[in-house]
Image: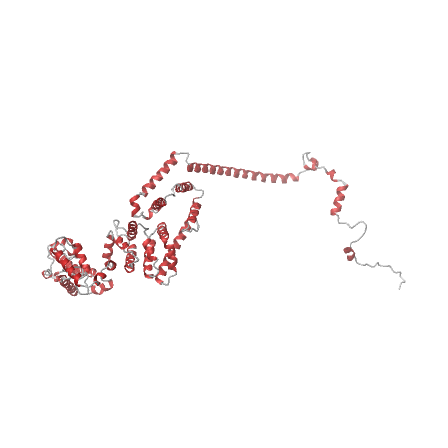
Length: 562
């Protein structure tokens, strides 16, 4: 069983050795003189695990295949080798499907053909006639070695006889672009993407390639950064793609002494290349939208805006490029959605996040008539203590305060201060908040004169007094209402049995002086104002005259009248 396992791994190693990218001439472009990547023989311990045939005591030579009969492998073992061959060939699932349906005999033939082809190609030697080959070999060679002399002699002859065009083509910008293309091809599979995620400086190398002077390579580098940014963390020891990209931008900003989003905003400002702008907008949307927490998204978006994206965004909105307009639309829609959520948090108070005055007014309004306003006032008072005679010192103060506040407020979202400030300032936010909370609890328990505690106790006492008074008033009101009902019933009974002759002297009718109303002047005055009788002199008004009808008096005629 162990012997068969050794055979399996031996063939698997040869299959892995054969899956190398070759150039258009059918030669292995990664070697010079048929050896390792640098032109020198590579020790077996430095090879990948699937190439270390010597681990099982098996020779790694071209004659090794004939020593083992592939026909002796079981179907299961052959399928494993065949599947590994398909994976290393970086075939899509659509192309793998018809190959998997092949018979066992066909799979054996394909594996043998691949192994023999690989051995033939590895046996070929490549001339070092490309400047990149010389650079690679000379960088890895040892001093005073015989092969170094031969390489230098070959380089001298090449420089003397060949034209200058190969040297111009080997310029740094072209080499950089070709390297990024190789990295893009390497990341076009799960294995390569996983290796990039595990590499500590992969994103930093890509960020250093963000140069608007070399726009072709910058576009590819930005697309790779956007793809890495959306990659989740594979385990707890490996950072997520979002964290790796932000840390790489922070490290580059520290080294260049600029703000970390300046290279991105500079790329967005190249209006002559919409493809470059579109690639950078994809990166911006990936950086912002991948964050789950609202505060963190607002923090990143505000940092972009402060870096100068506000003016660039207005220009991109007027672009004719449909892809760029789509990315700008995604940015604005996500921004508006986050602002609406923020407004709901602040009682639908519309806030202009780009205006210092509006932000202050909104913050002051939210803290009004609360115990927090005391600390807010203290913060403003301490900010006034920052001296303004040294502009650079004042800027450093505010930068430090911004980093501290960002760390305290956004620590739940996983935000970390950039690398430069971490060296100056290291804060354990959880411990700091715990100590502050314990200190506040201790002050409330031990210091009875605390302003917050006094205010709380005073309000509690006043509230209890108001509640007690309210209950007493309700009880009195109930009693008075019952007495009023009793008095009403008693009054009705008494009115039925009242005799005027039995009135007491203290009653109203007994005290009233009726004689003073018998005055003639009083009655004459009433008659003048309220009388309805006709005038005494018998004169008629014009209206009365018009309404009188003429009535003939009836006469009595004698009996003999005719």
